Amino acid sequence: MSGRFIAVTGAFVTACFAVPAHADPCEAPVPSQVGVEFSGLVRYVGDGDGLCVGRTSDPNEWIEVRLADFDAPELHTPGGPAAKAALERVALRREITCTAERGRGGRVRSFDRVIARCWIGGKSLGDLLRQAGVAEGGN
Image (tube, rainbow, N blue to C red; front, side, top):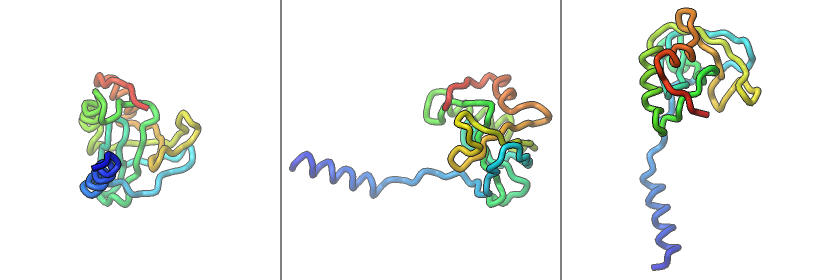
């Protein structure tokens, strides 16, 4: 057997058994202008700096947010799972208010998320995460 045949066969087998990535459940259109304010309960936490905000239990109304004031470690790196757990402890099922703003690249959106600064009880979510001892270090 040639090395090429083995490589092609391996790629085929991998593709056949690949599991699709779990997508977040947030399906609402995201704001595209700076200054747009929205609020609701934190319905879902995807990682240490990403969450979904919604007024109802319908994921079609949940807005996906990338926190503007906190860069958590990526989920698959050291510190990532702990950052996600901390964001869940601090924010999940709590009322939150967010305002869309520009990210480092000047855009209001990052992929399918709105970049926003969010507050719980008048405190910035980024500050709450730092106070909880969550290490920064993401992108």
